[in-house]
Length: 147
Image (cartoon, rainbow, N blue to C red; front, side):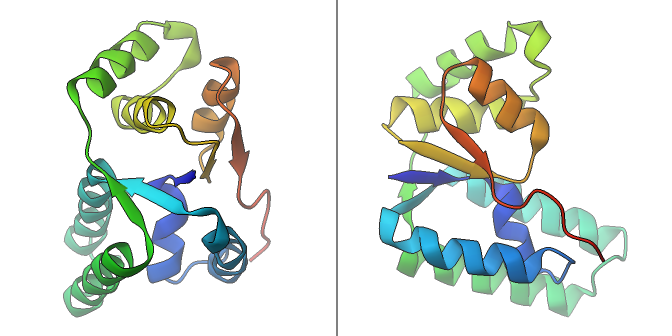
């Protein structure tokens, strides 16, 4: 099982310079039981909402992105439900101040670690670096894409 961070899902539904590269990479990951969590759904909705409220996305485009994401999650992804142990581990990760983790990323890492993910894929350098320091196998999906 591979765990997908929200950061690599957004470019699938919102056009940005790395969208095509991320889409191609995700196609390759589909054979490895890609997994997200219910926290991913929350974080995705938050990111889309921020874009819509700041007018970087039209509301109809934002709603279309949410519908498409939920359809993909329901049909193509395993969805984990965070448990008490996930929150406890996330708290321990956050207590390691040198990692620079944010709460949401700590929770993703804890869920992935506690539920047996072999690898985590993301677009967030801090999350990847922190995961590696925690001995969690993590990869950047896209290093650099020029626009």
